Length: 376
Image (cartoon, rainbow, N blue to C red; front, side, top):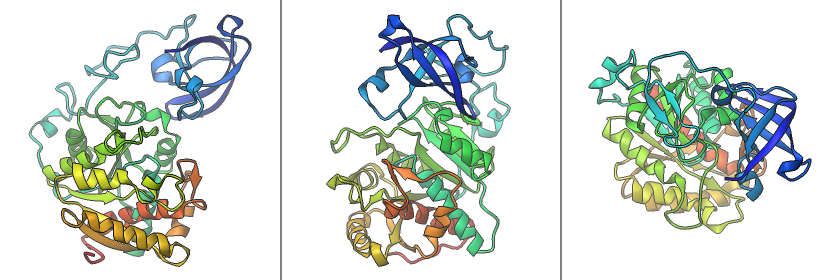
């Protein structure tokens, strides 16, 4: 861990659960270098201009995909007061210096414990599973677009954030905006992830909480920002997408697999359908899911043909559901958050977002009781 000491020069952007700062590093830490830093007030309080802060700069120094941030570890001259005694004993980010105690929706002290104690059935709840966090707003855009077409209200959406990427949900400006604009009605953080509206121990109990506590019409399951990959067949955090399909099916939900697709990624393993999706759904997912396959035409016809051909590898285990993309680009442009995946926006790689959006369309049809489409 690379430590730095600095002084807050300015408070910049703020969103739910996070504050962005400009920090000037002290001479003792290597000169008057200025860095962007992120603080989570729930953990360290609210840093003020002129205040000394201790930073972790490990990922920033290595140029990793942290959004270009150092992270505030502590305000040594202004430690926050002890939090009031409250129910909850679940530790997340366990056995790290910043482990935090939360009230789990499924633990004994929770008012929802009795509701969840013997819960075992999602009752056909549609659950869209995605590899990348960047797919979340596109999936919801697709679901809302389809709800309008069907003359139905927008679905009540719960976002279940797994711990493959960022652990604090507060890191995601997308989630903060989707919550503020009422595109997401509840965020549930599971595993070591924390900071959601509801905390749960596992994907399974988080899914049950989405149905029984959050009363969601549909759930989107994806890791937080910061997908981890190693360029190997199995060394990527999106493997958990297949495990989420299994959890959903085990509990009697309706898993919908969102494909990671790209027509612009420079890496061959991610063009067309990414090997991440083919591995997670083709090898890890042992239960059947509806795989939403985008019907791409026009300028994207070549990509569409490639995706259709690659998707056949999943047909032995899953049902392939072709979904038209008419009008979807306009719907995606209405997203309250800027769509971006691996540094590419909607104009740069439209196939990526259309592929996510069709999974939302299919889920909205399931909510309405209309299967939509025909098996490929």
